[in-house]
Length: 504
Ligand code: UN1
Image (cartoon, rainbow, N blue to C red):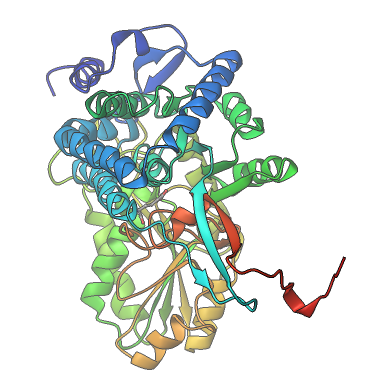
């Protein structure tokens, strides 16, 4: 690369329409994991500014809720158009700031476009039910109404898509959005905010100022959002520890929480599995995004009859996968986000060794650019214990043996997190058992594909310590609206429900 990373980044920000005043100031340092160097510094939002932003968003909501939902859908359609136009630049910015390989950076923007398309259709389908009533000449129905300001707290690993899953739905639902992105990825957030502002201009005065607000900074500024009574729902993506704190604060003021927390996702490889498909599915799910997705495959539960066929092949793939600058063609594994991620990985690996694990890979790789690059680790474990039971946000895949499908499902379910899971099998009974009531206890359960790489349309999220939130598809929109049950009497008497009489 001839030009410097900071130069490339600033040129991209400019092309994406971000005003220089937004990033050329002392304060928070935005680093690229590609080299570890600072590419820009930004001023952090103060608590007073955050409160003012929430106030603007609250006023915006009061105006936006009056705009008919299909018109709000038109706004999101335009947002999708702007994202299509900006895809190459925004995708590259994701690569620079989060370290994702080119196709994954672009894929993340595609996911934003997809949720916009989904939300446009949804804007004409915010249906309520009509319900049979026991009272004559009455009608009972439910109606859905805009909720208010939606708070979004997102993580570095999907620095823009997670915002869009929430924002696209919130906008069609008649809500405004206040976003606190990860302090590790503020630049992509500035770019998205610039794209939203451009869309608002195109849409015209019906889009109120304050419809989309951005708070730059760390946890303290996130807390302002979480504790503000004008914010009836907060969607928070990140660690289980973070979600526990946020969830409790929201509960204390009876606000809604949409929590997308840690995963400790497993795949079962059954004796009948198509091992070529399994190998490719496992490789992408475990090593893609350098193991930094919440849906990353972290535990592989392999039937003892196929273990010796699969694991050596997998070890070969691990030994040969190309690691390096995520902008380079052919590279599949980019950098870890920072040194702390690297240390966390090394700690988990030495714990695994102490528990009897046999480690392939995991070492630091010098790609000549600074940054924290590692060879993904494949760790053969005698049983599920120690670090296998928790999420380490790095490319470590623990492999274990099983004998019966019931045992495999029990191992799969025996961890705190409940996000995603999969089984590789051609045996229909096993596949059906895995997705049945007695099967995987996760929010996502797949057959013959890995646990990561979910598409827009299905509800995304998980159970147990993953937090229970659902986003990005199905009826997830309901979390961004309030439901009212309405009973209307068009008769000339007043019959009471349950046969109660109250004659005055
Ligand atoms: C996340 O890791 O935070 O299913 C979200 C996937 C992506 C989203 C992951 N569509 O892997």
